[in-house]
Image (cartoon, rainbow, N blue to C red; front, side, top):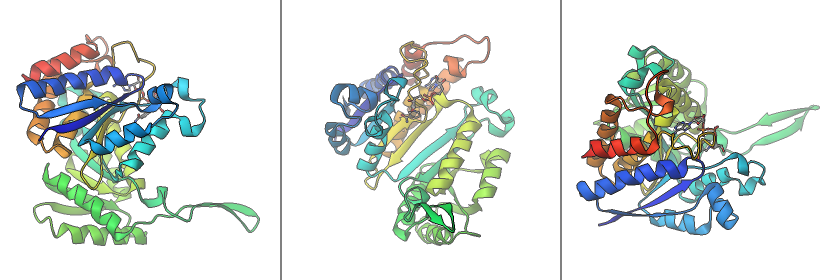
Length: 357
Ligand code: NAD
């Protein structure tokens, strides 16, 4: 059956890097038997300019109907003074909520050729390939009660870390399934020595783990996990953790790779329908100049093939093509060393397409 993809170019460098991802999609359809069709929608500042809203109803309807959504980035200085409900970032939050995306998958992958970009020693990070699965719709960011109240003559701020068994079960399943598609090792990160919510987290992950006997499950406290990520990051395959811990650990992991233009991400719902996007923003400082790195966008497309479209074979082809292009020495400005020759956005996309063939 033909699979359907909704493409949302958004703002800034979005349209430029999206064009390169589309070249890859076209090549997969022409040369590799990929049965898919795609259409375009509006989100962010581009949607506000056209319709007065950062997420038009038509975009959300199309997103829910598609098998997967590929999004570039939203935002820009032009929109920073708009009232909050009309800002581009609201479009992003609204599409995540509207699609019910609760599992955020953030790989930290470092090609050996780029190991010098990391703040860690190259031998600690060369060939790093870890995946952080972060719970995205629960925990302390959404828990009630929350607020600031008066108590004994001073203000007191409070938030609530709360997880139900069903919330933990579904994120655990997403992580076990992801581990099955990779190295079959899962480390669950919590703070079960101090927090009751973490105690339930650990118990529930162990219970779900009984259904995945082919995946090796371990546990770490979050303070230790943060230390291990910068001490010996290659010990991990997949990490699963709560919204708050995942927010922090995934940024540490991203920094291990040192190159924001290279990192993709995925957010999945219960139907394994997903929103796939680079972790970087719309980079207004370089928009329209043809110099943006399209590889995070192309690697987001690879994640889409693996996690929503059940085409791990094509995902691997795309990832291997990116690997070849880097091994051949092609660099956009953001990943080039001082003095190294650079290529522009279209040349990088063309090189990936050529490597696919
Ligand atoms: P940013 O990620 O857009 O840019 C940070 C730096 O990295 C800039 O110097 C930029 O040129 C560079 N960079 C980013 N992606 C690159 C790429 N593919 N190739 C080469 N260089 C790249 O973050 P920012 O500057 O903090 O934010 C800019 C705008 O993007 C803001 O409006 C912000 O709200 C928005 N934003 C959107 C998202 C999203 O859509 N998911 C995420 C973060 C920021």
